[in-house]
Length: 293
Image (cartoon, rainbow, N blue to C red; front, side, top):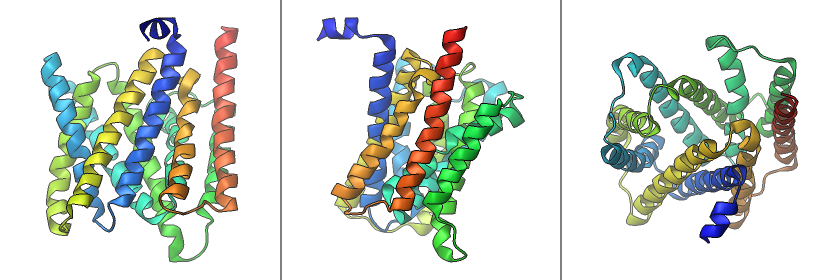
């Protein structure tokens, strides 16, 4: 086994880690949905509680800062605020939509990061990137299937969750060079738990042991997802492996069919292919640019 590990390329390790991460987040979504008719604030609180405990132990073990450097607090607060909003909105979408639909709408966030990076980090948007963004949003319309009624609200909330996640990732692009990963995760987790606690108390519903177990499992798989993605990008750059994160949609579709007996409709499937195609286009373009250097 050790020989296999040693012979494995860094890129292959990154791909394995990102697929494990995608599976972790798909299972997180499944357990959130399985926990039933509980308030979104309650689900988000228990999901982040597990992450906080794991991050706390990691910070303690490495003897790192719990709250980061003072000059980074504003950025840490922004990352935590948008990250918390993103999870709340994503969990609401998961409860109301077909699981694979909710997760694919959340996968719009990398395209939105391109826009935010241009606006807030002064990164230049290339023509091919802008085309990919427009194509991705066209794909989202197939999933949302816009109509002038209230049925559109869960899908719009799912897109809003992707926007918030993109804002959080934009902050992480800056924080990555300034703070340790465990510090950022702990700060985010404690921030979200503090903010969510009063809302959770107000809307709290008694849980069965089964529901409680599902939420703890959601938190455990979310932690697998977080560390999987962290290790993946440690082994290989995003432009080489990011496309494999879309395996999350395959896992989510299988879970939707096997556990919940729900099938994405033909328009949603078309939307999946369009968004995946836009991501594949960016992935191949980045590989081409990398080889030409």
